Image 1 (cartoon, one colour):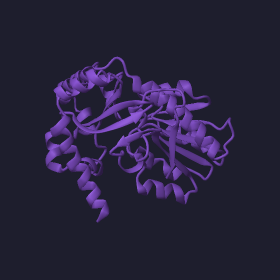
Image 2 (cartoon, rainbow, N blue to C red):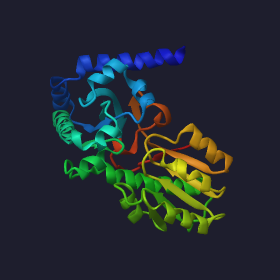
Image 3 (cartoon, one colour):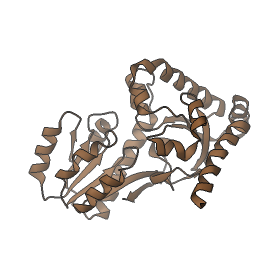
Length: 298
């Protein structure tokens, strides 16, 4: 009962927030008066559970490509604004929607200017898709995310008492985030989609030894590799959303430690849902001294 009340409160809150403040005049006035907005961040639902965590289905249909204000965040003495759309990864990858993506980026840029924000960031696969279509050239969340990943790998190594020389296998290591992570993380090996045989061959050679699996590929790709994992493996997941209950259960059966990157220290109102509760996603953060990554053991 309590959970249902909180859920309705969040959804009604989003509607009221947009009715009162989700307009250009409010953004302009806030930007002119406050002048310390850190970031404007656009998120999208990884699945239906994430959609229903924020908005009612009828409201979701209205915001498929139109950013709506869904929350605020606070980090390093700066306020950030969280916007959401209900379009999904399937919509982003569809070439027919390129113009819609272009307009989406323009809308977020306009909001950034009105609020006088220092940074504009996008969640999940959006930065990579926008860059691949020539829509974005400056992508601050890529460098921030990779720095956070590097710290997360170091923390997981410490938590599991793994040797410093233990290799890091990067799933999605030739993609938008993975290719830069490969350059930044020592003793790392990159494998991408279509290189399954090479990956399985590498895992066979390493079997029984401590290995970190860094997952930066697409959601649920992890599932196909779990049967080849062994007890000395530690998984660090950066992919949105978090590993499924089935994936976590299968890893637990094999004695595999799995950590999910919640994000960085900071406050969000309302808090981010599910496995991101209690932090701010790395892609919504800006780098600063004392940047602390939150890891959740699944």
